[in-house]
Length: 86
Image (cartoon, rainbow, N blue to C red; front, side, top):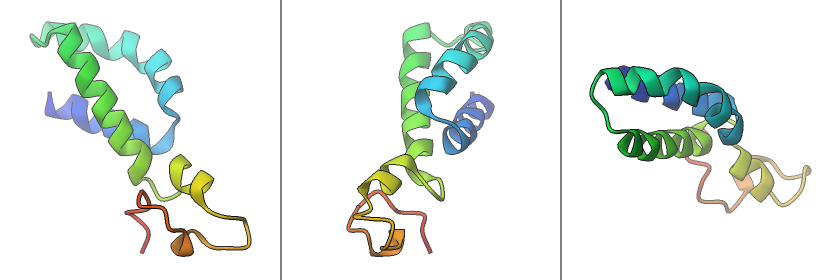
């Protein structure tokens, strides 16, 4: 299960959440069922991992949309979701 968590976290960092749900769920759900994970539990785990991946990538979608304008760098954005910026 830890490997599935890592895969979902990585995918969340590089792709949008809706696209990953459509592409990765048919691939990862049978694997999760084979290792004994309930599908509802897998869905909750998937949403949490993808959400964490969405806000922790370098140029996260919420951070980009929360920046006041292109003239201001993301570092100066008051958004609390920009945790991974140096």
